[in-house]
Image 1 (tube, rainbow, N blue to C red):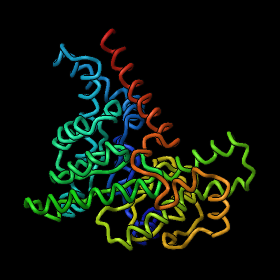
Image 2: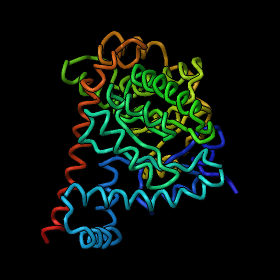
Image 3: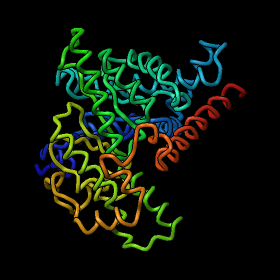
Length: 352
């Protein structure tokens, strides 16, 4: 039997994850070689609203069992219920690989992005939901500090709200410190599998918004390479510096985000609709991760878009600038809005 495009991608060394915790989608992804999954407030809201027949009875049961809950309390009980079931689908992979794969990433509340202490507290609570949970925190100064501490406690992390080489490097360096602390206290190295996301499609989105805002004239096709260039630069540095975190690509917008990031040392967390398109395409996967983006494209983007320089150059931003970077602001607003939509859905049920 011939293998699917996703299976061929896996055979070339790339881990394939499903970029959703929707149960039916995740089950199908696992059949096609997926060994992990990610979630965030927008994804969880879509999973719940897309399968109301399954989740509405769960929510109503939770409301009956916890009559004193606030809307936020009830929303998080629902998020945790979704996470437990999605983690259970991945549990056989986690067990078969002795904890190397099979993780579900669950994000701390977007409302606490300014507090390291509260992110740590929430991360510890979420990690207790299942043995194969990894905790997502934003790659801001406060979130990076939280991820260092969570790693030191033996909890796996996945950096999110991350769009740049400086963010990826700062996060990986913090995780290295956290891992060293964890190992000194007796945590097994085999238990630690940290991930650092670069949201490649959101890098492209941001550059396109900036180019339009500032009336920057350039080949529109160049903008589709911005996130790829950032990811490949970060991967090169991760290999050189022997970081123990694995880079993860997310936020897909076109096939290049898949076909140009194939190879060892990377995870592709692909939304269901996109990997289904890739599976049906006539593109033959090949190892491309180590192939540099054309210098003309990178040089043009660096020359014409200061925000690309900030994302691409190693010293392009300081940690205190991460939260205020345009792509970070846009994404945090989306995550907060997605979470609020979920809370409003819960509110409707509480008032029904």
